[in-house]
Length: 287
Image (cartoon, rainbow, N blue to C red; front, side, top):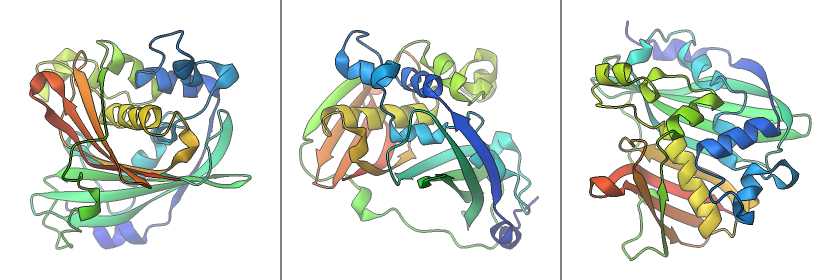
């Protein structure tokens, strides 16, 4: 059925209580490729509980069940087939460093519904706060195929500020995607069989399972923190990216970075497929 945008936007926010501890953070970090080499002090900051710091992208899996996205898709006025939903982009802003152990209340709602003609784009916002105040705000852009045509606005164009500068990158690094990385990443809460079951992947048009887009998203931020920000996760203020292509386990990702002072632009491509883009409009706002 067509999306009832007015009803979805007017719906009351949904609240959930989530909790996590160091094991959840460590599992997430390992799922985005941290811990290699296993004795590297820079990697142990992500994997060893006695010196653990938390990448801001952990906010996308905290609680372990994707409550914010699922809450948005179950909002009044939205009745869509999950098989028609594609994750188009992700943004996260952190209001203070994320703790390795925490309990928070998340508030989720639909903040925009755009009509692309043959598809709809839903913007789902999730805000998290604990007893000390706001922790993070995240937004997901979800494309819903076949659900356009409800008469809504088409939505904003891509901001020019998100485009990479017209010069050579300041840093370039390559990171391998392990063969088992999607199997490990899904333990943080995204159980979509597209990322594990070859038969299901074939039904979706892929010759093998693909990596989670949010795993690539986390890998890109880790590359920026490790190479541009001196390993300091607290320097990340906000991070945004658009998912531009698939990644297959076993491939190599190439991250090019441009440091513009206060903003790091990122290009992410798959090396073995001729630098095919996998993330676009990607930028890290820094402190």
